[in-house]
Amino acid sequence: MPEARNTIIDLSRLALAHGEGRRLELPVELEPFELGGQTYLADPAAPPARLEVSRPSGGYALHLTFAVHLEGPCMRCLEDAGLDLEVEAREIDQTGTEDPELHSPYVADQELDIGRWAHDAAMLALPTRVLCRPDCAGLCPVCGVSLNDADPADHEHGGGADPRWAALRDLKLE
Ligand SMILES: [Zn+2]
Ligand SMILES: [Zn+2]
Image (cartoon, rainbow, N blue to C red; front, top):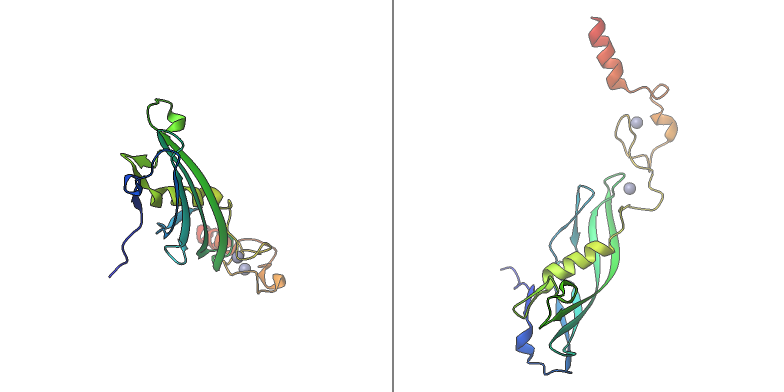
């Protein structure tokens, strides 16, 4: 049985009066992250998060913080890589105004889509590339072997010519 997903929070159930606030601690299930053509998964899938909800006046102010560990392939060598993110995000949802800046895209009818919000916030906190280590040497462009544990001399491949092109030339000459 999969665990119940904590992705929607009914803010009206908190029954906050204007000026009141509430702090919630809850696990938030995170969908997989797509980055640079690779997929990264949160481990655990539902990291514990802290949500602070307050009602300054006629609306909600929301503050979300959580730490998440992601696992997925190194973008250079495709070996396993992991990274830790500290995520912090704030949203305002104000009633009685048309200003889109004051309407959170994650709140509708007093329901907070914390799953989507947390996912987007973590996405913004991601680095542009995920590497197994900062100096990952990547894959040999000729044979595709990881160069991290290889002797570079073994991957000169006869001066750097791509053997696939050589094979193609041979084919044309026949
Ligand atoms: Zn790597
Ligand atoms: Zn090689």
